[in-house]
Image (cartoon, rainbow, N blue to C red; front, side, top):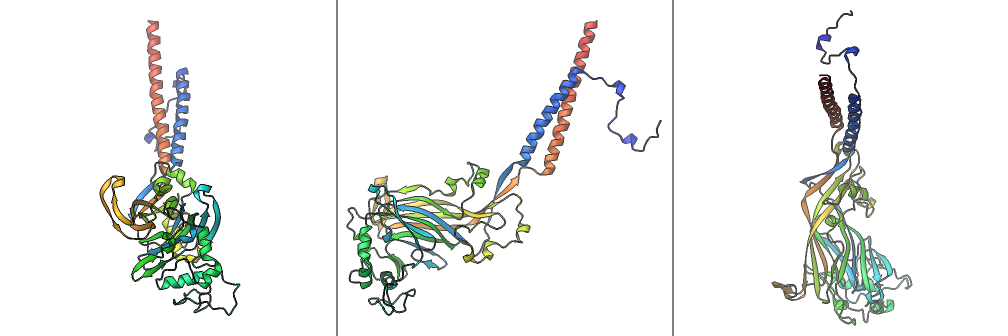
Amino acid sequence: MPSRSRFTRLDAFTKTVEDARIRTTSGGIVTIASLLVICFLVWGEWADYRRIQVHPELVVDKGRGEKMEIHLNITFPRIPCELLTLDVMDVSGEQQSGIMHGVNKVRLAPASEGGRAIDIKSIDLHADDPAIHLDPEYCGGCYGAPSPPNAQKANCCNTCEEVREAYASVSWAFGRGENVEQCEREGYAERLDSQRKEGCRIEGGIRVNKVVGNFHIAPGRSFSNGNMHVHDLNNFFDTPVEGGHTFTHTVHHLRFGPELPADVKRKLGGKSLLADHHLNPLDNTQQVTDDPAYNYMYFVKVVSTSYLPLGWDNKKTRLFPTQNEIPDELIGLGAYGHQIDGSIETHQYSVTSHKRSLNGGDDAGEGHKERLHARGGIPGVFFSYDISPMKVVNREERTKTFAGFLTGVSAIIGGTLTVAAAIDRGVYEGTSRIKKMHRL
């Protein structure tokens, strides 16, 4: 007999000799059934381990000096592109009037003709065609106004646009450009009249400081009159179009920051707060009016939102530069918010709206006689946005760790075999007793 090891008495798994074991048909059936159950439950445990869920967190937004992109697509079926101006301003004092980079004006045929696209023009700020056909020595007059700083030739106004810019700098109304040599030469009034019945779609993106601000689409060139921001409305109200121009509009799309990829939306699921309808609540919003003197206001509350992919580690990402550390001009429009480490910085927003006639009155037509409106203002569509101090962080995580997966597998195997042994024991004991009863 071999010598006994000192660990022998610690053996918790005592064995029986082969001759003392009894194998039964019912035991074989229970064994096969338990193996099938184990395989099924282990597969479910593996699928649960591989499943990725998005865990939301609410934190204080500590970002400073950041930029934000605004992407818009808005149709105005009853006002031509020649009359529309997009202005952007914020409380930091940065004001950029006129059309910014990355925005297109799409001329649309009248609604009676189907509203098809006639022409698409990518518009840059002050990007007018140079008057290359003029004499190099030509210097057009500015008609009493100072030459604009962006003029092709200092102290001159060689194009109709430069004359309009000069008038705006001293808060003068411009009108149709009658008796202005540059505008008559370029046919400004004729071009405006030919587009009177057209519509316009403004689409594209603008990059702004991530601070409280607003952008608006209003008729006529904008200028400052003292501390007031005003527009030259002469050409808007003085129109041969029956019923006048109106700011009936459809907001096809409006978002702040990059759009989430399709695979990310699938992970978030349709019930998530980041589903399209909740992320961009103004999408497909339509407003209709027959009053030329009408104003629409949208008050937007923007909430910063981060999406961190699986395996994202803040310590590792410090090896990569953030977009705040990269020169702004090196980041293309539309790419801002897609970080090098794979994370996405975007924004959600909520919105409340207000509309009123500039002629004053109440909202009796909508069932609100108690709501009175003041007179005056600028017709147009205004978006005023505020930045929330809180930030939503959506982090991809596995439902359990690998250690948790191993623990679950062990529990499945042990539990199944224990239950199977109890069943097998019960079947064996029951069969044995029945056989004894028959022998008696």
